[in-house]
Amino acid sequence: MKIGAIAGITFKEAKRDRILYLLFFFAALGIGGARVLAILTVGDRVKIIKDVGLASISVFGVLMAILIGTGLVYKEIDKKTIFTLLSKPLHRAEFILGKFLGLVLTLFVMTLFMSLIFLAIVYAHTLKVEGTLLVAVGYIFLELVLVTAVAILFSSFSTPILSSLFALAFYLIGHLSWGLELILKKMTPGAGRTLVRALYTVLPDLENFNFRTEVVHGLPIPPGIYLSSFLYGVCYTAFILGLAVLIFRRRDFI
Amino acid sequence: MADAIRIDNLQKKFRLGFIPKTRQILKGITFSVREGEIFGYLGPNGAGKTTTIKCLLDLIHPDTGTIEIFGRSHLSPRSRQPLGFLPENPYFYDYLTATEFLAFTADLFGLDRVEKKERIARLLKLVGLEQAAGLPLRKFSRGMLQRAGLAQALVNDPKLVILDEPLGGMDPIGRKEIRDIIVRFKEEGKTVFFTSHILQDIEMICDRVAIIVGGRIVKEGVLRDLVSERVLFTEMTVSGLSPEAFRGLGESMSTRGDRVLLKVYDESKVDEVLALVHGQKGRLVSLSPRTETLEDIFIETVTRT
Image 1: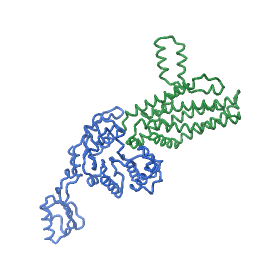
Image 2: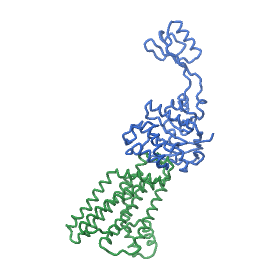
Image 3: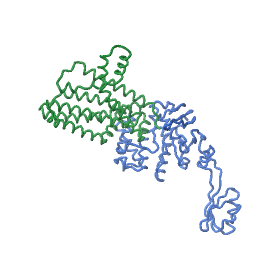
Image 4: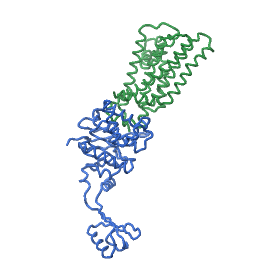
């Protein structure tokens, strides 16, 4: 109930943010613009539309999560609305969770609208509804949920600009860390290998949520990978949220 | 009578600035607020009033000391269930209407729909915001925001109401209304703990007060024990006589037309002034003995400390 109330107010606040609509506009432009790109490119036009469309949903969704998420907790502290909230019988963990769920709800609605535009454009070319595309969208959304948790973590102790930079760095590292796995395979056992393994374990691997290539090109996806990716996303998000709560609980609101 | 709030040896220091400098804000605060009383917490700016309240509400973690609210540690969110709080200069979600805002705060206390609706209607009437119920809070004046803040502090029908500068930004009529509401709380058996700079208001409605200066409680007690009924001086306005006529009797403060404002420190000299006025065919316009006020005590205490 209390978490729901915080989530509701967060959703209301987030949907008033102009950045959200600006990013949605560019996302729609990106998805729609894929048609133009497809005409100009040699190859399977539908595949290009799907690829660019899914990439647009992912990139603009992440920007929404970072730019709105990093300001959420900070704004409450800066505008001092937090005094009214935390003077109620509310755990600080409930506050963080409510903020997180409110933004996740916002992103769900935005992803839904972006997906509808995307599916409509694909339908215009193929004259069929491709359900498999939704699998890729579903995992993009899972990635957005994790990035939201990261944005809220940084927002609980830092300013929006720094938090945005940190969250963006997390996203970029998350998409490049798979390279460490390749290095690991080529390294001989030793201290260096242990170090790289530890680094790979700690750093996020957001490529776990990337099913775009498989879905667009109709490649087979090994069974069990959906579940492991899903569990990875849920566990990592829970870990980040736990960290955010730990930091937030120790804060003084002067 | 049981204690609504019990604070024992509260200490808090902050490290502030780019090159952190430690500043001790609270230096061992100890006091208690009894159930059913109106308790005034006074102090100059920066004395530690708001920091005490923030520690009480677990918004700030004290370095040492214990705080109990109705016998329960302040660290438990349940201790805040019977509590209502109005912050100084309240800031709320300005895009919400007063009704939406109250509904949101009611949800944080888990009120059911029927109770919530009834409570919101009653509170809007109590604080005089019935006409503005559908307006977004960003269109509210400072006084109206203060009233909305008071309404949200009462949404759970609290046993203990904590008000940080509730009379700030209010016009004289608004101040009187809020004062009346606070007195009504006491009649309903609620405990009120509030800070204010407006000492007349505190004097008018408080049962007990504590004065905090430089992070320490320097005076605490029942108001009528602190404020004696001793006459400090008598103010007299007299017409028809020159100020020189009162030399040796009292201090002539000002002259306006043929009126002289006198300050007579010695009570026995008041009769002499009256006799003089009568004898010289003058006229006594006003006479008011000035007893010690909370303001006198406050200024004396702060200056001495």
